[in-house]
Length: 409
Image (cartoon, rainbow, N blue to C red):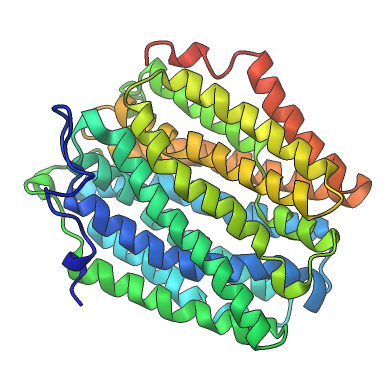
């Protein structure tokens, strides 16, 4: 069946309304690709904390370090791929390379016999994510009218997160089928990753005329840095604060296992979080084009505080799942919105570099957040980890870091 069967045309209910533009076809294609890769990645990632802690006997601090290095690698790589995509005037080759590296890494997970091998696989996987991320987001900005960018980024994030729901659900089914054999289940992360690469090759298109553009050869120069406004740096600062307050979702899976969820059902925590994220990202992205974005970001931090407090206090499945649902709402309320703000404040011709810089700073914050979370867990227990996350989020609210840089929006 051709991909066009899955992609709405201009008569779709998601098309223009009230004088606003319709979401471009290319955004739907990129969303479909993200969905496939997230099925693959989240199947693996929902099982890896259990694989590391149970099968390989890795301590929680080391798991936090692996997650921090992996996620920071993805975000830091985006600064170089974004700048390169501006200079080349092409986004698709880098998007293709990034998804290809992620697909290549998937067989390494079931073959791993040590934490070092898992770290290598996560590193390659996240390098792939880093290579594709900024060019993909810049491509969305290239093809989307400014008046609906919040909706466009929210839609792609929602489709991405549908994959994040399906991946852990598939993991649960496979764990039941293979009777808790994690290695056998991990092999099923390979096919959807290969399908994602094929979809990019066949259906992703550059916007007309973009290939003639040439950005700067180097981001790290005074002439280039001077083009980024105070508003852009305010958005970067916000992204860093949000990242410090929200550590790796691997700790949600570990919390579920700690509270007694059977091994096969531990990915259910990721299902709840991702379902909440998927259902909220597009509506809240759409809303961000119409109301104060600063208020929505403030709301997202309140949701994160509530999620951390619920997860820290959980003694059973009720508060555990409530915390996961609130965590997903926080993501839906913030991630697409922050991407839209980066696109809005990026200098002309430097969208890839803007997303790259944003993700560089957030990558460093991710590494710090996950290592701190792992250390808190190992020294004082799970409750300290989630209370620490709530504290970072509360500090952001008290210091006014959400509202001040964004009053112009």
